[in-house]
Image (cartoon, rainbow, N blue to C red; front, side, top):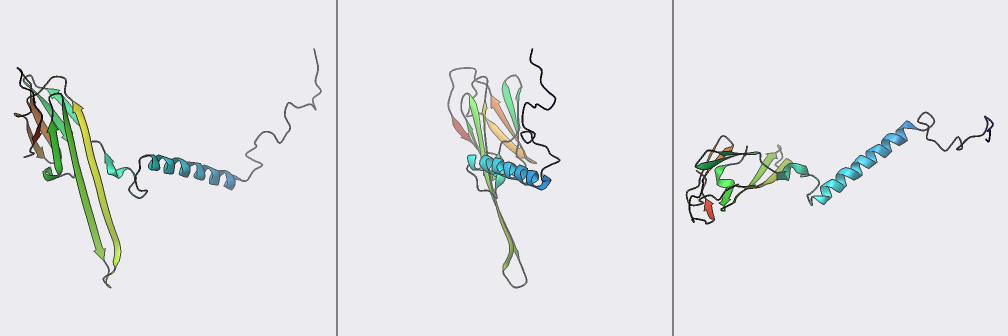
Length: 167
């Protein structure tokens, strides 16, 4: 057995980081840099402009219910008008999309822009349906930001895709 003297160390004293010996400001700046690099890498992977952020990507919440002879699909779409909504019904899925554009202008006393903002968002959702549905008899209604789509089930060989108008 080898005995070590108390003065022997496994590692030099400057090997371990001691938070009390270093400048705290340098650590905080390093952490800020790391978070900035992570965020900018995440946003660039989405191929979005930096000022848009994640507002351009929206996935609406959906509820799909089996009502016996039909399925009822409820989609939350606040701030979207029915003119902006596009619905395509296939025999085994429903594709819902919408695009909104908004431009806000504020002018100062001299007529120059003080602030001018533009917003763009695109909504897309594909919802698989467990059984084939009749696309020709599908109906959709939008009220208070809630889109309700009624999808009658297929009872025979009737299977087509059709674009649905929102009322």
